[in-house]
Length: 132
Image (cartoon, rainbow, N blue to C red):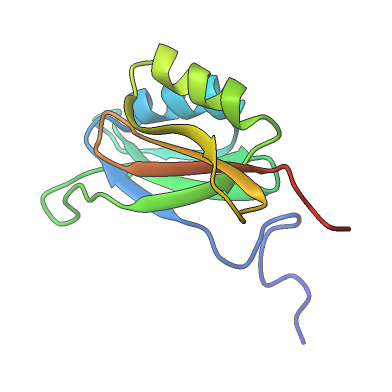
């Protein structure tokens, strides 16, 4: 088996977001989730052809939309160290509230959610109540 079939420290599955104004989304994710840029490829017109961001232990891939690859919306779930702090950062950076963080009866996670400017639905959680 080829052990080098993917970049070191990448998971096997990465969400891929195609958006209008990829730079704006990258700036938002960097501000909200402390994301770091891994690799970037631009088109001759300066638009982003492919960019990889590391958020905690995960890699998310992003590109600007084109005629052949139109913008799309998706839902993503991310565990974060502090759901309240992350949620506040998202709202401070222009995201729209879906649900403020709350812990529902019987759920070990406190969860909140918001939309980014591109219409992506972000669900964030911090596991608070475990029986370990």
